[in-house]
Amino acid sequence: MARKPEGELRRGWTTGACATAAAKAAYTALLTGDFPDPVAIVLPKGETPSFALAREGLTDGGAYAAIVKDAGDDPDVTHGALIQVAISRADEGEGVIFQAGEGVGTVTREGLPLRVGEPAINPVPRKMIRQAITETAARHGGTGDVVVTISVADGAALAEKTWNPRLGILGGISILGTTGVVVPYSCAAWIESIHRGIDVARAAGEQMVAGCTGKTSEEKTQALLGLPDYAMIDMGDFAGGMLKYLRAHPVPKVMIGGGFAKISKLAEGNLDLHSGRSQVDLTWMADVAHELGAPQTVSDRIQTANTAAEALSIATEHGLALADEIARRARDVARYTVAGADIKIDVLIFDREGNMAGRSDG
Image (cartoon, rainbow, N blue to C red; front, side):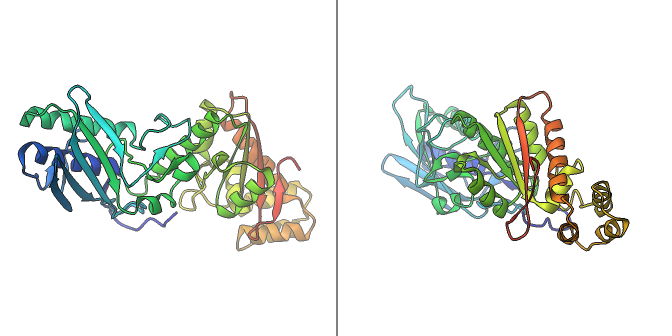
């Protein structure tokens, strides 16, 4: 995850908000011949932002408008993407029909809040667009029966940087957003992706999912367990976000994989493993080593180590199964977090080279 910059951060707008504004502009032009620019929309919480049009045009029986997404100061992969919406008339009584244009994905797996075969335009953006179409129709004398085709320039390439392929959303990105607003570094989108990943795995009947803190631990865990991509959860720093959702939406088995430093933070009871919100406690780690039988001189060396990796090296040098014990304690924290759900949890720890350093089941 990118490091959060200092100072007050600028908010941005979701792909759903951009698509809503583009749809309103295009439908207004279809009915009146003129494009509102900027175009204002109403967000779910009542905010009324305005968006400048990057492209616009009338076609034979339709209109299109495009907006460049501004994610503010959030490190969003779709920041700067061109979100284009084409509007054409539908038969009376059909309402709003959504289609995926180039760069917008199609749902191919169960478990998402959209049916298989549907364009990956999430429920809240659909609601926002329908509302904008209805209001525009009432203002300018339309029926509100339209085909809405959303496209995203280079959306297929952008999607490779997201969870979409793993979730079974193929061909492009999703049109997302529940509030219309991107709050910088809120991590809401990441946690939402964790939840959707669990939903997809459950819908596929998977008996185990694996949540990992990073790319190396994910590759090693997947290779060890032989799990399909959609059973691998990119947990990152959000152990709590994954475990609390699993408590309400359980699967029979969960494996957590990660590096020694991050798993040690989980073992101490931290559910947010980001370096800005929890720290490796070498004093605590030295106490654990002492409980394992480490001489005081070794415990002291662990306590004064420069990094968690050095502490692990010292323990290994003296034959202490510190990583196994840390994995067991992390497992216990995870099990406590999902208390009440019938889930078997275990933990794997990998060193910086990707070698197995410890596991909760020994």
